[in-house]
Length: 151
Image (tube, rainbow, N blue to C red):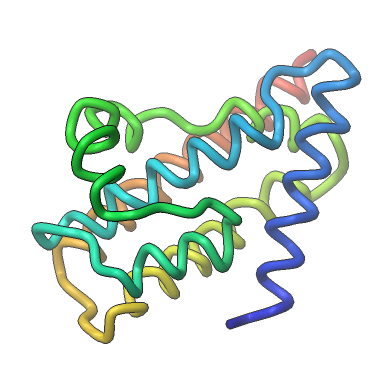
């Protein structure tokens, strides 16, 4: 496990709670839930999610899953739009401090690369879905920066 990346993710959870306390949208719990759903959507892009991928989600996001929970409660209805919307915390991160939004997107991309390789099978569908999500995050970040600079 990449301990530095794990600590960076934990720092974003703390920042989300700090910004929520200041009146911004989101929280660490909401961010964790969003990232878990994104992780499941990407891991399942090759047809299912493996034990190793679920362990990776637990290791990095602190979200424990089991296959019954994934199949019964998560797939597919909750995943319909998850890859189209950034976490609300992204906008808070842009407001929080210079470069925080960029660091968040970079950390998410690094984590998702690790997740995709967790089962030893880097699947083209998983890579494609991850790339679409990261591109959406980058666009949302650009829009958030523009909105902040105008406000």
